[in-house]
Length: 314
Length: 248
Image (cartoon, rainbow over all chains, first blue to last red; front, side, top):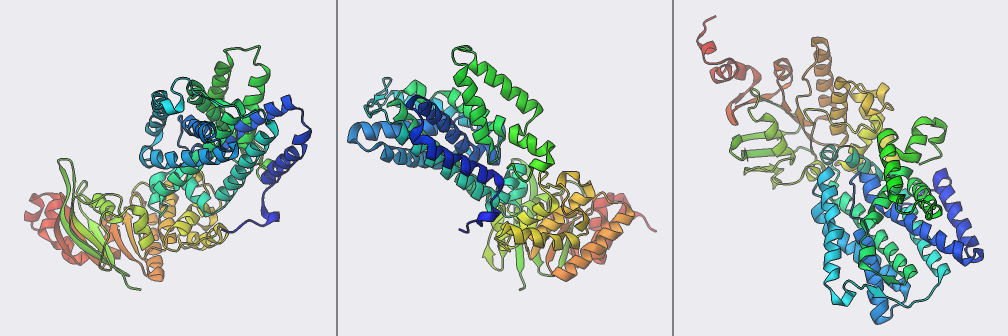
């Protein structure tokens, strides 16, 4: 693997890099309550980046992304709960389990295209929930309650590392030979195949990455909530929120998932008490408006209409 | 390196529709084989089977003696067998250079670096007369330019054996003359072997070394272009049985 020269990496990557470094430096001084909000925001950003690998880059809309998050959460819950594994180990194992699931699921569902893939993906969290509900080892309907304490700084650095890896990988993938193959698949999969692109393998690779990071993030999520609860872990609105984030931020872009996560998470956090129950409606409306009128999302639209920004934003 | 592709006794059925029924043909480096036949005679299907886009129901395809039938399209491209699409399928969101660069990086050349592939794409685009459009988005191209891009991408894969599905269709007489000259020049330079499916008889007659005629999925004639057009079976297939009885 050849790494890009430092000077050659774009302003967007620099921007995110500096942002992340500043956050990492400041974190120890941030009071606990705002830090937990930041951790929650970063959890959503990490999920958005993970979904971006498959849905953003290839255009395969995955409604079932939450299933990887749930697998990661349950893996952490189970291993920390029974064999007293360190939560970090749980996070890593969670990522691994989700990766394995993604390989298995993707080998089947990625054969479908367009709306058929979307529907197949929608079914997986429903299946997952019903499997977990009948497994006593995973707490059935009760879920798993952990007692692993309140440690926002460890959560922060764990989720920070996950995001940094995702951003780096996204950049590396989109700027090399792989990026061209992926754009070709997104544009016309049959044409891509007939020029030598091994589309099934490339899609499975991205799907596996997407599962890996969603699983690890799910582990962090279970760590922060000190437990896993079936209805919450397989909650489809999580999938929808992640989709909303990448659609609003800009599908397949480097900055999009982060911007989208901020744009969706912060308002919903601050208006929590004002718009109780209507949050999803508002997010839904915003997504419809964006999908209809500015399909490139924030980043894609700025790139399209402000040529000066094209070199900066990606 | 001389290469040989042999398709033998290819059958392809779609449910009850027998699109191709036992057609054999051989394609070699530096030779142009014309494949003609009336509409719906199975030409495109045969091409798709050879290119790995469809699996044959029966029959074998070998490249340099190696069985390759049933291989997926991307592996055939790695092996050096690539096909154009009858209806061009450019990557609309990319520029012409990027379109060609994809083929260059994923085809049998395996050009690893985007920067050098993009650079090299200029040369290929110049070959097909699209150099001035190199940095234009493919979505801005006319239908004819899209056909040229389709051809450029196949060249860029580095394929030694190319399958061309109606690349001369829909051209005005002047455009056709230019396109034939361009194709002949590029083929001479590159020395690839080509299997050309074509309706435009003028192109077939000028370019082909050998012509295979199929009708309703079966081979009805083969030979030099001149032999084939004088073959009563071919005239009948194209013009109906009455035509053979007409004395000039």
